[in-house]
Length: 347
Ligand code: FES
Ligand SMILES: [Fe+2]
Image (tube, rainbow, N blue to C red):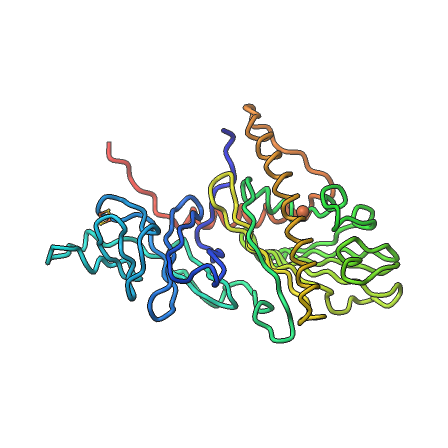
């Protein structure tokens, strides 16, 4: 199979939404690593390798006992730091039975996990999901599994001209015929597109806005794991510079395998915050749109996989922001590789 973008491990990835973790553990593959997530007795979240050190049974199939995770096969227990704290019928517990744990952090209803060097897991660089918990905002959220390498998912999010052709309720005039401005600031790529005097797409119409508007889209991208999208629409001529967003889509891009990606999304608004019908419309339209992306990305990944010659993909002018993101990824990967000690082979 054609080689896909390698994983970047020194990164806070969204592992789950907080509500996914309750009385039972959750198994999730992230960057090819099987991880068991669980909520300890005190409510704190822990993440362990999802493989018992005894006979390698998946720990996510076990159960939570107090602050420990109990293996579902022969009952060994592991605390949140991965220490083996109990082996049934055996007094001594060799440290060799300890397993790997991962740094985690729960904030604004989101559980983040750090896959790389634990010493570099700085909580001050956790991405911003504050609108999830902001009192005057309402959010709807969900998880889609994209059957494609995470770089194709990022390409998709950065080239929104696809919206006109893929999304029945998000498309609309203006996206393809207005240029995308973008800039790179360190590891962050910013994009902006202004569309003046255009009809609004179906999402806005479903929420009671119709007619001609000045419409804009803005993205803040911290590759590979975070895309913050803002969209606004104001009456023609009144939107310079853009006012507050109409809605925000916060997105966590978490590689699962080389050819699949967890896509965590939260759509936030600060109008009609108590209105369940508005929430339902936003949830349904967003979920349908991401289903449309799933279909496109699956077909694209299959097409790429079928090419044995490993030729490069094409790039239009509209791919420029995506290319800037790829440059950030290449730099981060090079930095990470330069930190990884080279292990001598035994020969
Ligand atoms: S496989 Fe886990 S205790 Fe035996
Ligand atoms: Fe899309």
